[in-house]
Length: 190
Image (cartoon, rainbow, N blue to C red; front, side, top):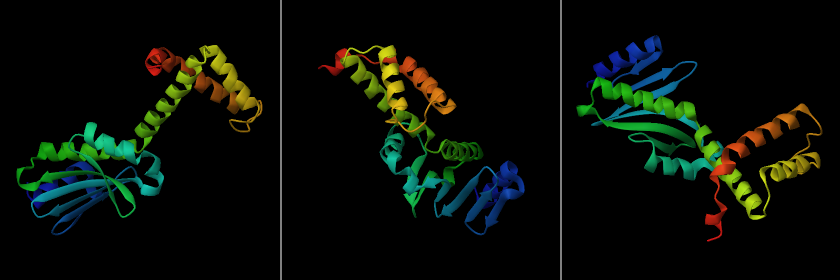
C-alpha cells in the first residue's frame, strides 16, 4: 500500500472524519471512534486509545496476558499514560483487506475496553467464594443466605431493604448458579 491507498481506504470507511496530515499521519475522530494511523518508514501503526493507564491498573497483568494469548496481531501498548490498542504492519506488504482487518481489530479492542478483564477478575473472585463455601460444606442456598445477611448488616454496603439490594442479590444468584457446578473442590484439597 501507499500513503494514497491509506487515505483512500480510510476515506471509504470513515468519510470526512478521516483527516490526513501529510506525509505520514491520519486521524479519524467520530462520536464512537478515535483512530490514529502513522507511517514510520517501513511500518504502519494503527492505534486507538483504550483508557488512561491509571484506570487500567487493576487489569494490566490481564492485558499483557491477552497480548500473549488472544489479541493475535494486535497488542495493548502503554504510552504517555494511555493504554492503546495497536497493530503494526509492514507497510510494503500490507494489502487493503489486511489494512481493513487491522482497523477492525484495533477498534474492537478499543470498544471492549477493560470489560473482558473485569469479567475475568470477577469470575475468579466468584470462584474463590464458591470454593470457600463448598470447602465449608455450604450449599448454594447457604451461600445466598450468608450474602443476604452480609448485605442486610451493611458489611457489603449500605443498601437497606432497597430495590438495589434485591437486584444485587438477583445478580449474585445468577452468577453463583452459573459457576457453582463448575467449581470442583476436590482439586482444591490437593
